[in-house]
Image 1 (tube, rainbow, N blue to C red):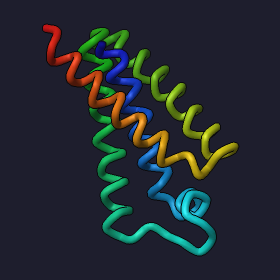
Image 2 (image 1 turned 90 degrees about the vertical axis):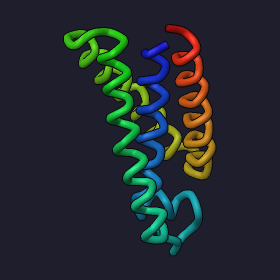
Image 3 (image 1 turned 180 degrees about the vertical axis):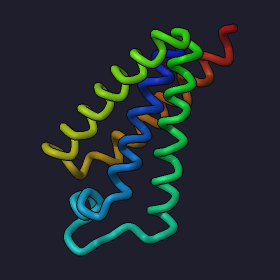
Length: 115
């Protein structure tokens, strides 16, 4: 379950970080729109915390040596999903962010339910 938590946290983090950028926010909301400063800071903070959570879950699930390798792999797959979404369907990035958040919450709850 920690592997799913690591992946979903990375997916959510990269989605949030991409929406914090002017270009990707414009692709999502339309030309000329930029994220308000409060939203931008929130997305950046959430993205950074998501990557830290992803690293913690990978190391907790796979140990200190293999956890780093798994984390880089999870980040690679998550970043690829975000890049492909931004390239081919930029208006769906918010759905990816919401879906990643739901998956993150579900995997965290399942991880708490199982010792």
